[in-house]
Amino acid sequence: MQYSYFPGCSMDTTGITYKKSIEYVCSKIGMVLREIPDWNCCGATCAHSKNEKVALALPARNLALAEEEGLELDVAVACASCYSRMKHTVHAARQSEETRQELEEIINMPYRAKADVLSFLEIFARPEMMRLCQEKMYRTLKGMKVACYYGCLTSRPVEVTGASSTENPMEMDEIVKLTGAVPVEWDFKTECCGASHQVDAPKTARPQLERILKNAQANGAQAIITACPLCNLNLDMREGELNKANGTAYNLPIYQFTELLAVCMGAGVKDIGLQKHFFPAFDLLNEYLRKAGDTV
Image (cartoon, rainbow, N blue to C red):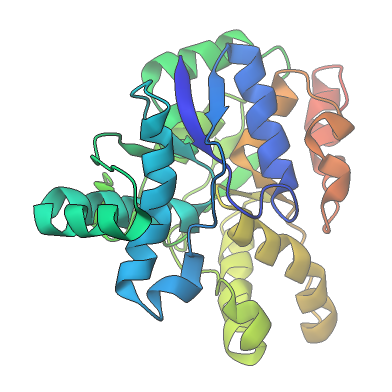
């Protein structure tokens, strides 16, 4: 069980809890992640807002490097933005032989576009992966109510991602159920968090975060679960700020879905970086773990 692995630029900094929890879970279930050698930034937002060919070529080089390993492995991608950019490149290369050849010329490497690009949501939602995860769990978060927040890039556009649903995806919901947590029904599963506009246009972007927090809490969630380093960072970093600025009382820890899996497999605080959260992350987990005679 192996995948080529593209970590992306955020995974050693703002996405460290996602990285550590992914690696912890993979180590427990025997999944091997082979990091692509000499990988480069996928281009994220800036490249495709400036130059379409550069936006396709940056991921193409990473995918070509993975192919160069000769193992014919699919590529696992953690960041939703990286995932989106790589999926666009694969889609464009498979749709047009002319485009594929042009990308080869730009990156000065062979690129066949044979490997699929997969998010960790897609990987862990596979029945055999869910079975392996469940076999390694001995803790439970039974009864903890959570809002599964997918964000806007893991499912859209559907002609590129091949997602089962752009409005009501269920992969994370099913994964989270393995931990004993209970996904709530709510209205903002696939709304945008504001992404980098939380930095350059906060007056416009902050209300997007508040709508997500408000709707999740109104529908009974005790935490929000994510699958993207930027979505997680925006909600985790800004929740306390929004409470202070607006006099609200949102009380929703923000976890990556792999953090819940890791905790239920026995991970401690420093194993997965729980201490690095901005909004308090311990109390809710311990409330439910204590019911089963354990703590994180």
